[in-house]
Image 1 (cartoon, helix red, strand yellow):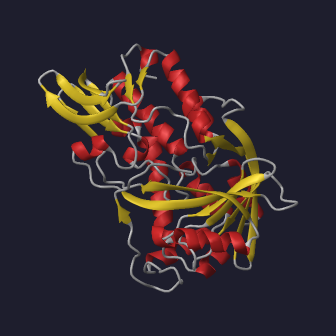
Image 2 (spheres, helix red, strand yellow):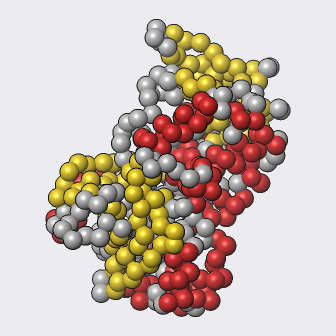
Image 3 (spheres, helix red, strand yellow):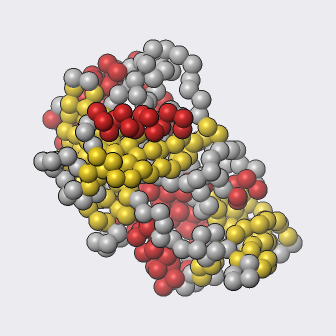
Length: 381
C-alpha cells in the first residue's frame, strides 16, 4: 500500500526466503476485504461447517461463505511478489543490529548481503512487523508480550470424514481454550490445542490424537502473543513515526488465537496512518473494537466451568445459528445486540462470570495459570 502511493519502502527480513516452514491457517472471508481474492495455490481448501462439542452437548454452524484454509508459505510468497510489483525493495538475509534516532530521522543498522557487511539505513518512518519478540518494540520500550504456545499435528483424516467440516472440542480439564481438527485437503488435516504450558503440550496432544484415532504425520508448533489493550504500539518523534503491526502489536483474537486477518487489518491501518498523516489509533478503531470484544469474551471464558460450555452449546437455537453462519469471528463487534436478541440466555451466561473467579483446568476456582512473558517465535492460526 505504501509503495503504491509512491513511498520508498524497504523490507528487511532476517530469513533467506519466505517459503518455510509450510503450515496451514484457517481464516475467515474477512481476509478478502484486505487482500482481495486469494489465488488457488494460496487458499488451498475450504471448510463450510464448524461442529462444536462439549460433554453431552453438540452444535453445528454452517458457514456462509465458507472459511479458507491458507497455506502460510504460499501466502507470504504471494504477498512478497505483490509488494515487489508495487515498488517495494525486499532485502533477505538481512538482520537488524541497532536502531537510533538522529537529527535527520531514524537510523537502522543492519548486516546482510553476501559478505554480511554492516551498513545503515536512514528513514522517516519505521514499521515493526518483526514478530512476537520484536526488536523494534524492545528498543522503544514496549511492554514484553504475553504469549501462549500452540502445538498441533498434521494427521490423516479418519475414514468417512467430511473434508468440509472443522471440529472443535471444549474440554475444561485439558485446556482453557479448545481442541481442533481442521481439514486442509480431502485426506489430511491438522489437530491441535493451546496447552497451558510447553511442558505438557506434546503429551496433551498425543492423548487427544489417541482418543480420536488420528494418525500422526508430523508435529507443528508456534508461540502466539495475546492481545494487551493498554500496551503501547506507536511512537512519534517530530515528523518521524514508529508503528508496530501483526504479532509485534499482538493483534490477535484471544478467543481463537487467530492473528492472520487481524494482523493484515492492522498493517493496512498502519499504511493508511502514514499515507494520510492520521492517528494510528484512529485508523485502528475498527480492529480494536473487535479485539476488545474478544478480550472480554476470553475473560468470561476463563471463568467458565465445563457445564457452562455445555449450556452454551445447548443455547444454539436456530436464530443464533443463522446469525453465526453469516457473521464470522472477525466481524462480531457489530453484531453484539443481534446475538442478544437471537439468544437472550447468552447475557445471563456472561453475567455469571462477573461473580466467578478464574478457574483452573479441572474446573474448580483456583490461581491463575502462569502465562509466559515474551517469546522466541512468531506465528498464528
